[in-house]
Length: 180
Image 1: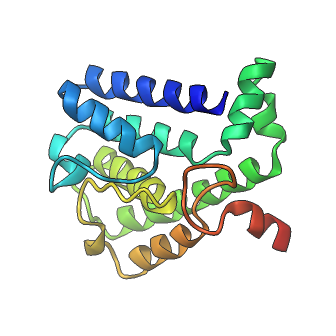
Image 2: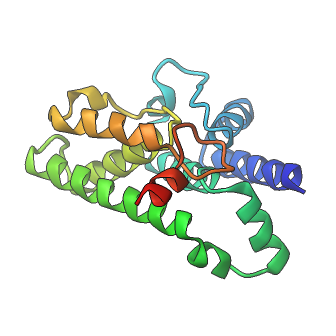
């Protein structure tokens, strides 16, 4: 059953990328890498090659979904209720952690005027926090140019990774929840 969920996510991600303008080869290749949280790209510039906010947002959605426990996805599909996500302490902690880091990153990117507009700042800030934080490693721009504290914060965030039972790397959020 978990393989079907994994396959369904991969196919859905590939179709979304394709609909957003990737070639079929790029869409399938990037879908495999997004759901597996591998971060491998068919282009040197990673997802930045496509210069598309839509593609970046699709990647964010599927990186976050893939960073959640696949057994929990099975529970949600089987029970036909999204409530299992809300009741899971690890998912709540992970979502809160990601949200706090996104708020810090976007606020500092605005304050340092790193990007030309609000939309660009939001897209790149959210994308890189999710990509690095889930240990995927896709990029749209060079986040190493960001103010010195932010890249360090992202590397520390990647040590956590995602939830147990997901494709994300890191030590997993459940360990932080248990330590707390």
